Each structure stands twice: as C-alpha cells, then as structure tokens.
Image: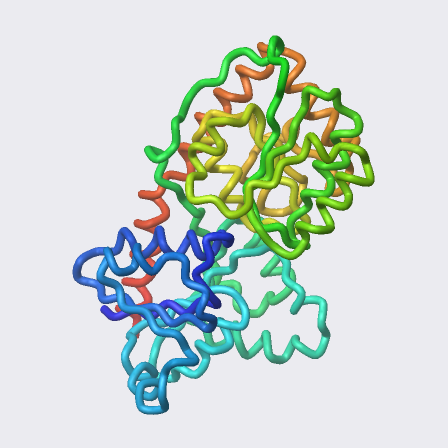
Length: 346
C-alpha cells in the first residue's frame, strides 16, 4: 500500500504536524509513505531522513514530477486547508482526511458551502479527532455522516514523566503554563488577564511562537504583570518544560483535541481548559473547565486547585489516569486499520 500525506508545512509549532510525524514514525514496514508539503517550512527534516521517508515541496516539483506523483499513491491522506483541496486532484486515489478542529473559518463563509459539499462528497472517509469534532462536522455537513468516524489522537506516554504531583501550598512560586501556537485560535490572553486576580507568586510560562506574541506582551505590560509572563518560544523539549510547571492551562477559542493538554496529563499536572468542543471531551471533568474568554472563571479554578494540597494531589492523579485513554498505540492501530479498510474496499 502506498500512502501520500499532504500538509501545509511541518512546523514544530503545530499540533497537526506533530500528529503526522507520530503517525508516520510508527507505520508498518509493508506500507510506503511519502509527504507533499505546500510550504517549505520543515522542522522535521532530520526525523524524516532517519525514518527514510521521502518528502516533496510542491513549488520545487516540475510538471513531469507532479504528473508522476498524481498516479503514485493508493491513498491520499490530507491534513488542514488548503492541503485538503489539493488532494482533490488525485483522481485515481482514495482520499481520507483528518478533521483536526471543531470549527474553521470556511464554515462561516456562505459561498464556500458548495465547495465544502464537493470536498466531503469526494473523500472516502473523514476521521475526526474527538466525538465533539464529529458532532460539529455533522451539524455543518450532515449529508455524509456514514463517512465520518472518530479516532482519538495519541501520545507516547513513556516520553513524559508520569509523575504524581503532591504538595503545592508551601510553594513561594507557582508556575502556570501552556504549550501552543500564539495564534487567534488560542486564547493566551485570558490566562494573562487572570493573573490580575492572583497573587504575585503565580507566574505564567508560554511555549510556542506566532503572530499574537507582540499583542500578548503588550497586554501583559498594560495589566502590569509583564514580569510574571515568560515567553519561551518554540521549544524542542516539551517534556522538560512541562516537568517544570505546577499547573497546565489549555486556553483556546477553537480546539479540536488539545494535544498539549494530554501531554501535560502524562506529566502528572492538573490540567485546566476552556469549555470549548473537543477540549472539554479530552479533559473530561467539568470542574477543570472554565467559560471561554472569562479570566475570573479561570482564576477561580486555578485557586481551587492550588489552595489545597488534597485537591492538587487529586487532580494530578486524575491526569495520570485520564492520559491512558490517549496512548499512542490506540491512535496508530486505529489509523492503519482505517487505511486498510479503505484500500480493500471496492
């Protein structure tokens, strides 16, 4: 079986990109995999080289190479827009896409509805990363529900400390943190605003880069909390970053899954998240969710966790138990079974 993955780029700053690397890193030996990247951002060149996986940049292919690639794969797996539209050119291949988010901007544009209809009509299968993502997709495009299924994202649990956290009340500094793009889909602003309701011992550590960094830094300065907000940029050592935190917060406007939240769970951190579709399903407990864009609601949840050693230990143990549902082995098995079913289908 030959599978071609199409994705916009391979930046370390994106969850879909990490998802793809995990998927191809664990492929069965009898499956050939190649990658087609629309942009030349590729932070995983060394990884791909070690795996022996061939990749192409769209802009570097000549006409002959493009035509050859069009007839190569049995299955094309598309990730994100505009890559999903490019996959429609592969007329001889079976098409699969992963729905990574519970909402996207295209759904708000009425003139895109016919194109979206044709897109979902053409795909043999659409895999959603949570049931909530599937529910939102069904609400938006109810005509092809038999083609929709759910496979949870997964992580390699052994890469994280899986350490029970115990006492927090005696700490002179409490480190809150989040890993994620600095992008309008995320909502680091609400965490920064919540610091105004918390004592000086609470610090915020943000890992990730992106277009909203200057806006976030300006907000911290405006609120007078700039000395308590630390920007770490894009990092390669997420497990070490998480081990240095006390509480993890996934604050988002749109979050189909929340890979960072699961990684934090596997580090034994209490995990707090926005009450948005997908992320609420991953966190799984209403007590650890706060109303989207509400810093006061967030600060109340933070204090409920951090002002009692008993509560802190409880939510740490909850995280360690919850992350087992998102083991990488389940994720890998689900996807390669889906490929086989599509390949074998007439």
